[in-house]
Image (cartoon, rainbow, N blue to C red):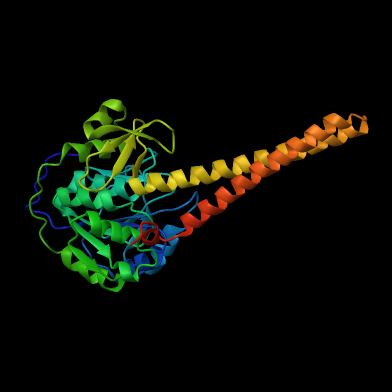
Length: 346
């Protein structure tokens, strides 16, 4: 489990963690390309990705500093950029990197919050956290953890972000120190990395617990009960009970196997599930109608007209049911397609 007490009198803000998602690659390249080649800081990058990634190759072309794929056991060195790899959370412990296939957070692995939380627990006030363009709000809870552990929180200017949800969420729920366009972030990070880190406060228990869950060191209902209270909702990933986590005004949930979500991420997952169920229901009604008609045709060939008529009547009912579901799907898709500010009437 990450260290709970850290003193940083002899350290500078030399741990930089950056999280990005949709629309975040271009500003990430600009930031890393603008950093000086003699920067005495270690940089860790999480970009939401699929099963394969060329992130290291892309960033290495842009950055003056060395870019490497993160590996478990690597010693953390200044002047290096460590990029997350597919299907593993990027974490740190002591002076080394830790990769774990821990429970997904906000429907992602690697996710931003586990990296930020792990850095905050391990390095306290030495940490600078940066949230770039992306959908939903991964990174918000992580920035809150960084701030509570004495670090610095930065977000990309939402008005210039291709997908501004993540920066906007961080601004709404975290105590942000700097808001800047991507073109100004490299100079800002270089300046902050030269500043003394200051003193790290005691690391809150709940942050250490969540960092341990991501590292697969702790899981179970006992941990959940220390983080919050049981809710009436179920996990979109495993369908177990969700616990509502105490994290200020930010609504967050975690299940007993460790899957973690903001309220927005739960809502998005529920929208996907609802759409999948509606498509499945419409398909079932259409197949029932087709099968009833095929059975009616067979009965007609056997001169059982009364039974054939009954089957055709049933087929018509199934068609009506399918049309009801089709209208529900149309209405569902129209609501999902609306921007959030239109849905809530603002």
